[in-house]
Length: 216
Image (cartoon, rainbow, N blue to C red; front, side, top):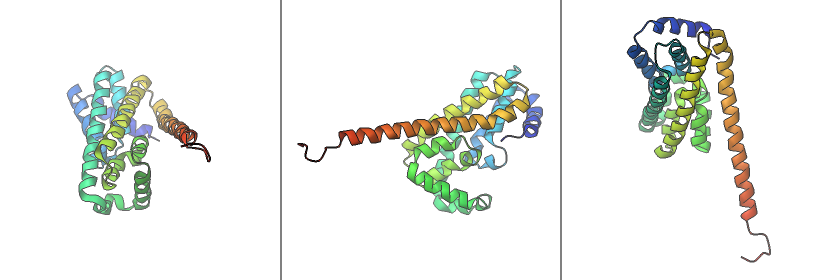
């Protein structure tokens, strides 16, 4: 869950910046979260929420912010995918990733089994958001499948968290309380939808399967 003190510090630092610099900073941090692994230092979620707060004060436009965040998230993850695809498992030898090796191996296994679903759901957790594009590249997932899941995740995540900051205004304790629950809630809903569709698909397959003794 995001620390209100971190949000307060970042908000104080960017509040007085000209709008163009705020947009540039947000784009850089969201883009770099997966492309440059800076998500281990400052999660993009924090940046997006703070930018939403700044937009609520009239310093920047919320519509432009949502669009910028979505584009930066998709492009950053695309670069992360390309890096993982190019370097393969050698990427996991980086020092910044070594202490997370067990989690990374588990995430990579999940990526190979579930593919795009893992990419989409991973967008809503801080650790996976920073490493999932690279793992998708390492697993050699087809780029078109990755791009679709990445774009959908970036769209939902970017708009939801920009608006969360915007409508919470300067009430940082409220942001701290609800941001984590928003992520959890979205993941639960997404998983529930996936399970329902999977059950329906299996039921349809059983229904369409020829019964023993029936004419073919």
